[in-house]
Image 1: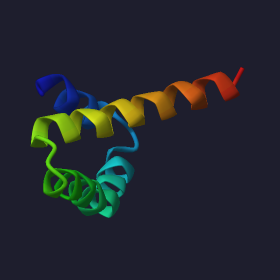
Image 2: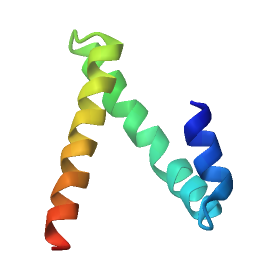
Image 3: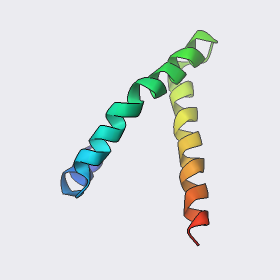
Image 4: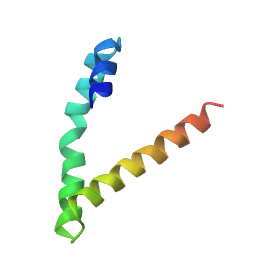
Length: 65
């Protein structure tokens, strides 16, 4: 976690990142909560959210080429 916090402190868009997180965090937590209600473990659901986000980042990086 320290690495993420250090990155945010040095990032010129730290406020923008914070604003973005604030805007979407409740939606992400609802996705995890909905998955838990369907029987998935919280860590499993959170890992899938992270996996989907990672796939999206990789897709975006390929578009820039």
